[in-house]
Length: 210
Image (tube, rainbow, N blue to C red; front, side):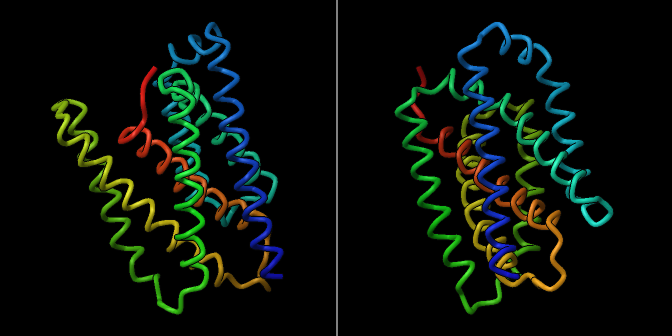
């Protein structure tokens, strides 16, 4: 049962990433459609945030179908951001970052799934760090400090890299007897967020712009 749970997590992770990258690339080659989305980016970002928060907080009350639907909607909305990524950065940078992210995910995921250490105690520290990043990011919208932006990118990269290990540690220790597919979708969502944020932070740090 646990093997099925893990395979379902990776299945839904792959589906989410394919939707995001596919939708983003499709938008990037259709500039008229992308412009329509870009002109409404604030509304899309708000909807994406609401969907993500609702999904995370209400997962226990959802049916499998609702959980899958919300996850796929979130992945599609994130594709709007990746439409800009494909337009702003050259393809060699994007491919390099995708490869680097895969290596990071493989290494930290393997460590998290197989370590004998108790990684649960790091969850609180990472959550506090995440809130700190969010608050500083909002402040920096008005301050517009390049130094703060660089520091936030580096710190965010570290936080989401560590989150992969912690999330995989939790997934590997899930109780397969209480398996419902919505929880596989939920943990796929957590890993999806880790990967998307690592990609964006690596692009900010190392990406070459067209």
